[in-house]
Length: 253
Ligand SMILES: Nc1ncnc2c1ncn2[C@@H]1O[C@H](COP(=O)(O)OP(=O)(O)O)[C@@H](O)[C@H]1O
Ligand SMILES: [Mg+2]
Image (cartoon, rainbow, N blue to C red; front, side, top):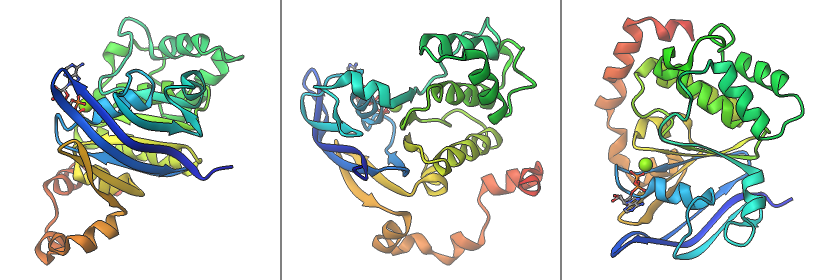
């Protein structure tokens, strides 16, 4: 089997006369966590929408697990799942009900069993019978990601999985993402946070000005930009680390 999960070549997309993607190129290997890093408005969601067959590109070629997004969209949809930037939950229903509904829609043979397993895996068993609108931001995100795993997709897209979360909830999501990758799932995530890419990504790409301006592992990028290794930065804890230490999260881990 081919070792490449995602191939993107010459990807272009404009909205009216605004060119957002100007020939984006990157590759993601199977089982890898790949971060697409870019500031607000860089075109991350546009790229994810095209890769997940929700939007048509103007030009270029995208294949997911060997399937072409334009010619074989049904095969692509079978292979992927997408978690959007904003949690897609029904607040009036419990976490469990939300999940069973999706499991039924996806046609899995044992929705209740699949739901209970995933709720347990994402530490949501206790909260399973509470309404989703009572969940914290981190719990909503975890439920959202858990729901995206129904049917065990080979590739999952996470569009800014931790934007808007507090540092503690962010770390919970990171742990779950790492677990998924450990189990062999290919993960493409977008983020505005350098630290998130640093924590999670095997490789990362920086999307800027409509193009991928750098790709590589964190170490490769650090070698390209040595000033990143300034001693001062390594010795001083970040504000986030201080915060987490104070609230005792570091010790628990
Ligand atoms: N459906 C759309 N119609 C018009 N402009 C859009 C649409 N979607 C995105 N854009 C524009 O494309 C640019 C990239 O947006 P987006 O892909 O959402 O960026 P990111 O996810 O990196 O923040 C932004 O300037 C945005 O306003
Ligand atoms: Mg976005």
